[in-house]
Image (tube, rainbow, N blue to C red):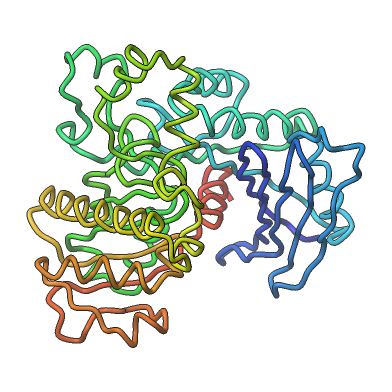
Length: 395
């Protein structure tokens, strides 16, 4: 019998999964991973084993183009049964974007807590409904199977109150209108790797740059969150693939009052038509923009780097210094050009990059005599979720 933990990460049009083998007294080992993508349009199922060998790569039947998370889960379950006939699932761990003010740690789910998490949907309208749809789908298919929610906001609950406030009346803070921060599972994993491999660095003043289609940065000291670029929602801070990042709230009022946009139109603009896509007018994909010769593509890249540089200075100030910078996530892990440009603009913080190490995607990419070190650590949110799930299930 093979015992395992299933990890699900549900989005609006995709359902990603990872299966980790559980053995007592050892770390979890990836068995297979994949996703159902194109949910609601042209659903396609892809899965690979831990050797990166393809197990499935096929469109789902055309009659299922209205496929939802329940049907996506069924496709995943069918594959797992076929590939691992002796499989025993111990539990399912979910990435849930928002835990609000009260959920500061992973949580074993009950009908009551699922209802409470639904109440947080306005804080993460693009993510929370889909996270919960996957949870409900599992509960319907396997009501006996324990489920654990792992929150992207939980890692940041260690921040001092001063870093969670807005300049609003204090009763707004008491009602939950505060800076939450996101990408916490990524920051937690990266911090754990740094602590394991470079404990002296991890004990110092570190900024982690999670740069992907969703992007943020976090000041971390002794593996605990000190301050984050993101705030009340996942719109704040760095410009992202399609999201604005930092924005004067007066712009929203202007769009509503003077340009007569509806609330829905403003939401669409801020979440889906801005960022790299909006500024460039070409694409939200950094690779496409770096390959483009269009002036607006270059402008979007310049602004992306500019915002990173500003946030880096701000986060360093929150710790009264900087000992290390860590890059992670899609752009951070794969774009040597962006890393180089960020580091060049951060020379005033004592950063000196090693161009050869950077081009080779090495673990340490700073020059040997750089006062502030620079590191490259691939994120693994799925493994972090699996570890939390194991702990919550008492395994």
